[in-house]
Length: 111
Image 1: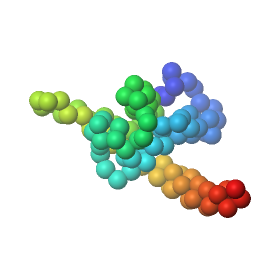
Image 2: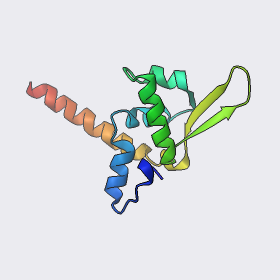
Image 3: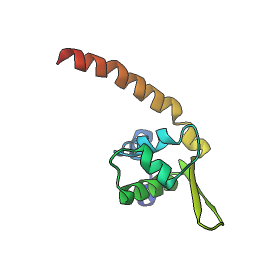
Image 4: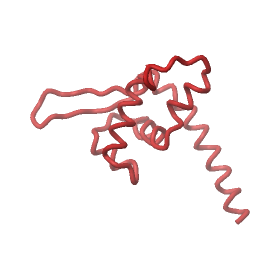
């Protein structure tokens, strides 16, 4: 599971590998409320390249945080959603967001 089938012995190491990437939390945050197609995800995440989005989606899929559903239709349709494991990250992301809101105001006030 995850980064090149790395064997984890530290839960913090695993968590950082899952959500610590520049784009991981953006992707997970975007999928908190609903399934999204690739183009919809790309529009949700400013400045991410297609190549990087593909890499991050594959990584999150390997950690079983997101799932990829392919519909057999023309044109092809693929949707990404959070797995049950991915949905468990919501309180963590909400806490990180709240911390950021609190400290963003403090940092801005000190400038």
